[in-house]
Length: 275
Picture (cartoon, rainbow, N blue to C red):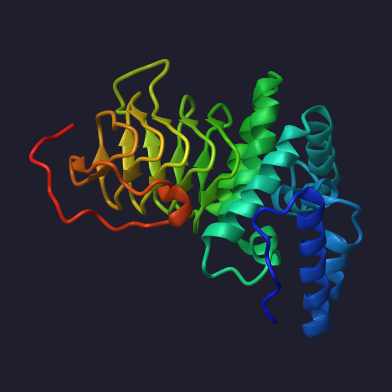
């Protein structure tokens, strides 16, 4: 399929137009996919309709059918339009930060990180409404299907990029700011000793490298960077890069917006203090 122009700063209507164009191009190239493209995307009037259908066809099981899952999604979107706005921002984030993307069809239909995140957004809405059992059902299905385990009680912003997604674990009291990027096998967990508020607080624009483990009720400041494979147990100042086991500061300041540039390189200078 020829690569279609992607405009990361597009508004919701333009994103929807681009997604439909990608689906139409897919049908022309692979007619066997025509039924799928029509059911999931082309038969709907907007992103909310298509997204609810996609989540429903993925999360449905013997206990809860697709129609029931879709009704829950549509109820969430109607009650809180910010959920769809966050999904649009997530889609723009993938378009902006993933060099492998060919068109918006890829994340919408095939990228685990994006799909799991959209399912979690509905689960989180259920959690805020006191519907904890159904929220846990969504969490369980997302974990089974996509190999991501995000507690419905966690709080996460918009414009998130969960690259690859496999193995990501985010605990109940974790907070993730806007425009964060994280790769596979990232853990935002507790130390195993605390109760109550026990998970990390990740600032806006943070980049979390593959396999990074951030443990405990600690703050990672805005636009910080946690290198791949690091184990972080102490707070990180805004704009700093940390690396190692245990993690220590290896550079301040880091790139202005590491989550957007996806720059995983480390500074040549090694600091002689730990955090």
